Amino acid sequence: MRTLALCFAMASLVSAPMAAMAESPWTVKIGVSQINPKSSNGLLAGAYESDVSSEIGLTPAIEYKFAPNIVGEVLLAIPFKHDVTLTNKVGVSQGKAASFKHLPPTFTAKYLFTPAAAFSPYVGLGLNYTLVYDEETQGILTGTKLKGKDSFGLAATVGFEYRVPNSQWGVAADLRYAKIKSDLTLNGGDIGTLTVDPMVLGVSAVYHY
Image 1: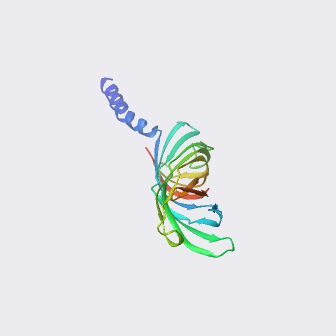
Image 2: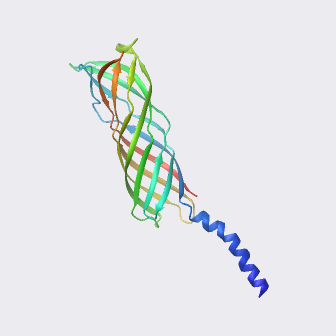
Image 3: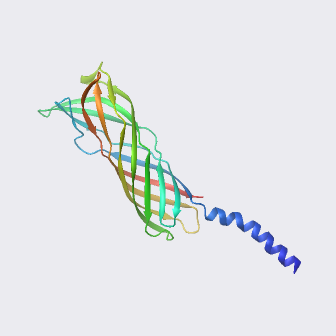
């Protein structure tokens, strides 16, 4: 009996860390996303229609499960660089006139419809903060100083994760929307608002701790 009891005790000690790992609320995601700004991104200086380029970049994220169906996500991303082209009122393109970088961390609360299943769709709502920096000018704006204001707005997502059976790994795909706009100044004077409001398509590798 003592030997049997000792075996049970040792089994409990070994399985306890494994159970803790299985129940960890933390998840890490490494993905790639394409940012597709809305068309017609704003009239600048009262004379030029602006257009912001689509870009692709890495988008890591960290998730924490507060409840079986409720997950909090922080989308970190790396800085994206976008080009801005201008078109005058008669429809003649003025070419690339500026570029800027932005860092868009996004905090989202997600609801999982089938958290215990291999295939788990979800929806989410959150907030986006976009840091705008490293503005550069060229073309018709050569020699000027452009500055964009940081942005704060709502964000939403819909997507799914497929988790490999009996594994900590999975894959996820999602479509996001973020309200992003930046008030611009040129040589210190207000020239209007650049409205990006992108749809973001992403795919990720997922690891559950």
